[in-house]
Image 1 (cartoon, rainbow, N blue to C red):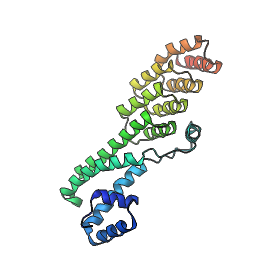
Image 2: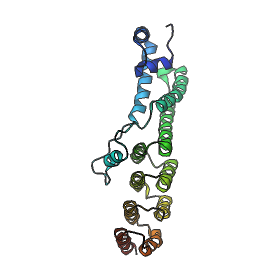
Image 3: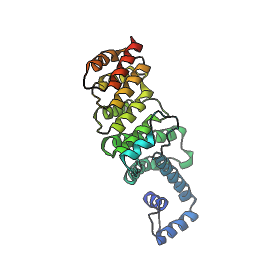
Image 4: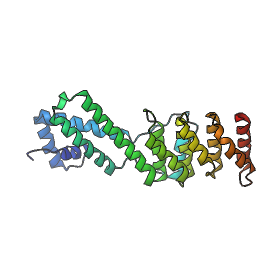
Length: 251
């Protein structure tokens, strides 16, 4: 083994090499300072993606995150499968390889900021994809990740949440989406989208959660849907009563 590629270093970090290959890589790394530096760069990048699979909901959440996960699936798989991690890492390697060619540790702060932006964009892409075609428990995890993002609201992620609210087959996922969207009710477009979605919901728990959320946001556009709900004989008494209370508050 005369040279080590980034792919081999990734395999080394993930424990995919056999004993002979691992020993050869270790020997070359010990002999080459540049390889040591590159290994640490890759370790940091992979660690960044691994952290994206973790979500520890705060104890004071109004909804039971773990209960919803357990009701959807006994064993929850990681939010980002290994294949996604490899794809994301491969894209980042193109960027880091370019930066390394420009000077390695002397890379400018602008280049590092650009790299961090790439990582965040990939994380968002993974979350949006998870909302589309993964299991219900994975979709709930994705919703939780979006809700806990430290950055300002992202239009694409908000649209993905609104789409899930109207189309997801799992009531647990839709309820989680309502709670996540509570973070963005300061935006009129989100409030109006919630008003429009209210009439499409059939689950009483979701209906009540949405009514309460719109009342907290003081969104009077919900008055018309509330009047219609009160007249709807198909609704449960609890939902109707909540709609009546909401109207009394908003009028």
